[in-house]
Image (cartoon, rainbow, N blue to C red; front, top):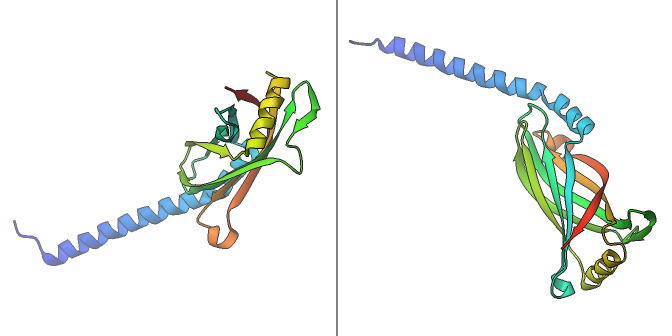
Length: 185
């Protein structure tokens, strides 16, 4: 069977055109989901500190404070990238919130660049280490011993999301403040 060269070129052109039209349609549909997806992120706040842990080391300079953070994309939009996760926190006694450790201006803070894709309906989990000096670790141990089982952290969490508009608008920041029980080992 012999094919006409002109027919093959015409069919190739039609297939290329259909493929291009499909790609452009899907990209446009995804673009139309951007602003509703940003609204969902703002309203649902699908980002939180799941766990705040302090592990005392053999020496105070080996102690660690970590925050387990989850960030999810509740939408169908597929263009979110997680850029950075940061937090600041202080500790307080759950029974008496006026008893604090590391309150303003001495809050503990940490930040981590993530650069991960956050796909539709996906969840990303980040472990953020909060740097401590030996003196800060010693203070946490003392505070935990004094108010054992009742130590909470007030965490101010910030996530920065990047879209294809980053050259124009920069990243989009979302914040939330939450109280999280401090678990210690």
